[in-house]
Image 1 (cartoon, rainbow, N blue to C red):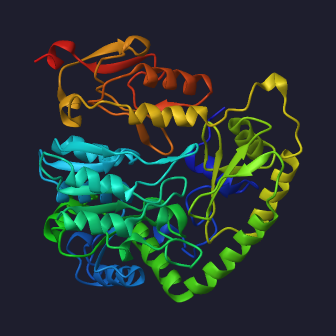
Image 2: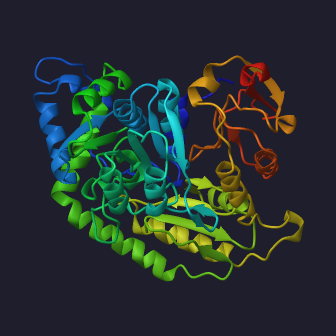
Length: 473
């Protein structure tokens, strides 16, 4: 029997009744594009060049800038990752200093590793079983209380994957008082500012560079994103240069057309679309009262976080998928994350509500074990916060390495990442000392059925570390 191709499997899956409470934000329905092969072109006459835009692409980017109230906006076809890599490498010189939130996406770490940038970390304040915001007071202390050189840039993730927002305005004021560029990874907040129900966008709160993933929460194809620039601190010439480094030299016109189509739709019909969406979302939340399933609070109402008390989060995730054909975004150790968007339907929210009402009536099954509480998530956060930096990312990635059994690696310096994906936030980064807390956390997550990423060993029994003689020099 010949196995189905990826294309065939996609067609079969999308023809089923599976409903997407996950990215991308178009939810496989909000879009009016015809056969993509029919307009997949290259830089032919009349269609401009993304890396030297002066015609139709320049005007499309200007429309995006106007929608978001940005001074300058660039299309990204390699996702927010390209924007993050470009922003950090343009804002921080080789061997420079970067102050960054420890709950940042792995692409920020990759940027630092590429340029031998020294990282100093800000840790989110506790927020139950999810990462909370970065406290402006911690930013002030990091910038004014250090005897060393000031960092050239501050990298912040807001909102987080779970929809938690930091006080970007206050943090921007602190950063600018010290002459530091503020880069905000707002990948999951491209819909911010589109309706009063959502937080304001960092673009309007003083950030110098803001990265948006359109595809995460808006009707645009996967890999489409935007980079916005404001103010005078960011070197725009260098930023444009880095965008040409980290973006394809043959950017997809299909993806760029999707970006422009999304921007036009929001510019012309956004008020109506978001008003209707908020109505659907509010009706769902008004009826979502359960006895054994909690809706965790956050700052972004589009994110639905479900914490079950009558079963594990992994079982809730599986039941929603297998029994009700509702595909969620992610199962964390203690909760399930669903992403809604302007493209979700009343029928989709009703299916979700009906499913949760049925699952809420399930009695706890002693045979299935105790539902995973917040302990694992808090342990993961604690493991990251207690990490001791003993080498830069660049040093750890490029120094002589050896393989060690993870269970015996306490005290050694990691040369690999260890993270859950999604959301791609490292529990352990290269250059950090491996601790007993981290080892215990990794073992607990593996036993609970969560797949860790980053290590060369897919079973996570071993880890690459810096050779001990290297660390003693």
